[in-house]
Amino acid sequence: MSTTTNTKYLIIGNSAGGIGAAEAIREVDGVGKITIISDEPYPAYSRPLISEYLAQPCPLEKMLYRKPDFYKANGIQSVPGEKAVAINPAEHTVKLESGGFIKWRKLLLATGGTPIVPTMEGIDLKGVFTFNRLDDAKAIDTFLNEYRSNVKAVVIGGGLIGVSVTEALVKWGVEVTIVEMKDYVLNTILDEEAAALEADALEQASVGIITGRTVAKINSQTAGEVGSVTLDDGRTLPADMVIIAIGVKPRLDLVAGTKIKTNRGIVVDRTMAASLPDIYVCGDAAEAYDFVMGENRPTPVWPNAYEGGCAAGLNMAGKKTEYTGGTSMNALKYFGLNIVSAGLVNPPDDGYKTIVNRHNGTYRKVILKKGKLAGFAFAGDIEKSGIIYNLMKDGVNVDSFKQQLVADDFGLASLPESAWRSKLAKPSASAVPITTAEPKEEAVIGD
Ligand SMILES: Cc1cc2nc3c(=O)[nH]c(=O)nc-3n(C[C@H](O)[C@H](O)[C@H](O)COP(=O)(O)OP(=O)(O)OC[C@H]3O[C@@H](n4cnc5c(N)ncnc54)[C@H](O)[C@@H]3O)c2cc1C
Image (cartoon, rainbow, N blue to C red; front, side):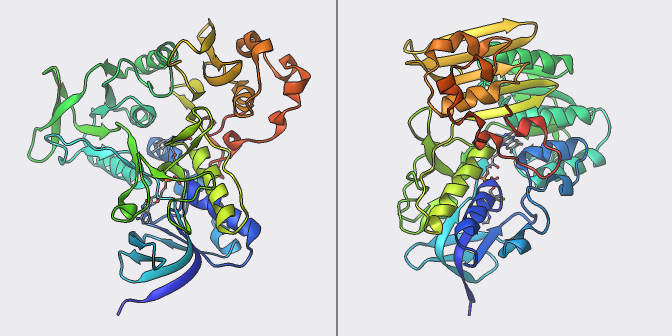
């Protein structure tokens, strides 16, 4: 007979969202039993740092999101390497892959996303990888250690994950070509002009970039191993390895077959509650409130997962709290170029005003709607982007000083007193540290 254990709070997923929730629960409820299960066998680590792991390598200890004694110190039962295979909302139970059930009073799904893997010939060959978790980085590391020199890689997808794995591979001496279906790299987080600066940095590092094309099939050379790829225009590129980096989709497998409402992600209200009682969702799995768009949608970035997890945790523990919302927001430094963007980077219609300042390899662009910030993209000099983010999040009317926002000497002193006195000094989601180790600049939007 299968065993059933009991917990007050069950968190599935031991990453940004799960940790945010556990910390928030402990703020309210110092004793209620918290159990965190994860199918990954590690303590919570900073997912964005898996490229550092592959590149350096950066050991796991330096990637840990919280100190090793975090779980014990907070009275949290951590169950690594355990997969939840089904939830029963009516009975308040979760079935585990290893057998047995956990009965919960409040459940949080912080299960993140899964990489999108296209169906194509050759996808199962040795040398094809995704890049989403530490084990992916380890598998690539093992492959490169086993492999001969002069390795050629094709990275399918020139988004954040594609560029991030490319940087790590270049550090290994791998010859990389990025194949991007759209017209330019990083197209979901940058406009074409800022992306051109990143493309220059990539090309200076001898990375090949093919845009407007995709890979139609992966060909084997020796039995079962990658030898080349064929593009959709018929061209063939030699390749010893292929990294699939075309995006991540919210993980919905656990709610399939239940009455929990889903759209692109699992739909939550402003308390991060799902559509059935006592079940909450946060992070990449959720479709939560985006304060720029004024609607729910997936915004799969680390700070949003943490902040959404905090809001969920407070509500799970009985402290009614509204998630103020996140937005698409990225701060990165790949191939030496600092980039920060958030909200809209390309205005969708004429109802928006765009102000740009470009010179000497720096680019600053802000997008306004009805006097308020709706998005921005900074490349090169990103020093003041934290102030811009906070003005946007606080919904400050910037119309009277909009030109200043992109000026070289922009700073707090440029703001009228009313704006200055808004919550600018208060840390926002963007300031949440993602690692206990020396943070990589990409991890934080500073101001
Ligand atoms: C290479 C890379 C670089 C990135 N760079 C950045 C960056 O620079 N800045 C940024 O803001 N964001 C970045 N991101 C995105 C960021 O990592 C995610 O937004 C964040 O990790 C989401 O956190 P989460 O808690 O929702 O889920 P995740 O971090 O995805 O964690 C979910 C966990 O739940 C586990 N799980 C899922 N289903 C089950 C189950 N059934 N049973 C048990 N466990 C389960 C998963 O294995 C995983 O461990 C990057 C992501 C990647 C992959």
